[in-house]
Image (cartoon, rainbow, N blue to C red):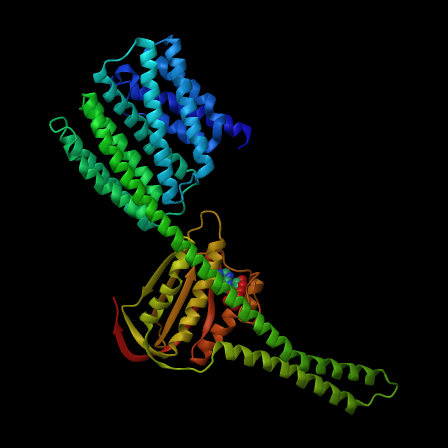
Length: 532
Ligand code: ADP
C-alpha cells in the first residue's frame, strides 16, 4: 500500500473505531466496561489482518479513546493503558498467526474454521485479561460476577469479530457484475429481511426476541445464493437489526448476552453455508476454465494441422506457378520473343494458381459442409439449443442473451448440427466482441427469428458491441480474414458455405457504433410448431 493510502486507511479505522465504541458504550449495557457487542474489535482485527501490525498504534489510540468514552476524561490511566496494551497485543498476535497460516480472503472452509478458532481463543484471552485488570485495579471481584463478565466479554468480542472482520476480508475486492435477476433477488431478500426484523420489532418488548429464529430464513437464503460475500453482509444487517432491538427493548444485560450466543450460532451457520457455496462455485468455475482451455487447445491444434496440410497442398502449385512465371520472364528477355511459348507458360501459371484456389475451396467446404444430413427440425428448438450451448460462457462475461421468436415457428429441413454450428459461430463472434468491450456499454445479444415475405425463415443474431471497421466488413466472408490474435478467420466463410448449401443466404445486415447484426435465411417447410 502506498503511504498516503495507508494514512487514509488508518484515519478511517480510527474514526470507525471511536464511532463504534461510542455506540457500544452509549447505552449503559457495560457495567465494568464490558459489552456483549463489540464490533470495534472486529474492525480492528480486520485491519490488523489486512494491513499487518502497522495498524497497531491505531488500535492502541482507539482503545484509549474508548476509555475516555466509558470513563470520561481523563480516564484512569493505569487500567486503561493496560487494557489498550492487552487488546492490541492479543489481537496483534492472533492476526500474525492467521496471516501466516491461512488465506485471509477466506477462500476455503479450512480458512474459516481456523479464523473462528483463533478468534475464540483471542476473545477468551481478552476476557480473562480484562478480569485480571479489574482484579489488580479494584481487588478481587465477587465470585458471582466473574462468570457473567467472562461470558459477556467473550461473546462481545467473538460476535464483533465474526460479524465485522469477515466483511472486511471478503469485500476487499469489488463485487462482480450482477445480472438483473440477481438484483431482483437481492431486492426480494432485502424485503424479507426487513419483514422479519419488523416482525421481531413488532413483538417487542412483550416477547423479547422470541421470533429470533425467523432470521435463519434470510440468513440461509442469502448465503445459499450469494456465497460468502452474501453471508457476511446478511450477518451484518441482522446483527445491526438485533442490536437496535436490544437498545429499544431488552434492558437486561444478561438477556442481551444470552441473545448474542444465539446470534453467534446464526452467524456461524450462515458463514459456513456461504463458504461451502463459494467453494463449490470456485471449483465449478475452475473446471469450466479447464474445459475452455482444453477446447481452445484442441481448436488450436486442429488449426495447426490444417495450416500444415494447407501449406503442404499449396506448396506444389505455387512452386509450379513460380516456375512458369520465371520461364515467361526469361522468354520475354530474349531478343526474339516467341509469343506461343510465352502464352503456354502463362497458361500454365494461371492453371496452377487456379489449382491453389481450388485446394483452399475444397478444404473450406470439407470443414464447412462435410456430408449434409437433412431432416425436419423445429427452428425454435435449434435456436434454443444453440443459445444453451453458449449461455454459460456468455453469463461469465456478463452478457445478457435474449431470444425473440414469432409465435408459430415453422419446421425447417436442415442438417441440425451444421445450422447450430452457424448459430454458435455468430453468437460466439458477438460474445467475443462484447466481452472485450469496456466501460458501461450494455452487453446484450439478441437472437430473433421470423417469417419474411418470401415465406422463408429469417434468423438474426444482433449484438450491442462496437461494430466492425469498414474494411473488415468488405472482406468478412473471405477465408482467413480475422482481427483476432487467435482467430482463424474461417467462422463466417464456413457459415456462409453451410447456409449456401442449404439454399439460403447469410449476410451482414448492419454494423455501426451500436453493434452488428448478421442474418440468414432458410426455406420453411409447411408444418408449424407452436412455440411458447
Ligand atoms: P474469427 O472469429 O476466427 O476471426 P470469423 O470469420 O468468424 O473468424 O470472423 C471474422 C472477423 O469478423 C472477426 O475477426 C471480427 O473482426 C469480425 N466480426 C465477426 N463478427 C463480429 C461482430 N459481431 N462484431 C464485430 N466484428 C465481428
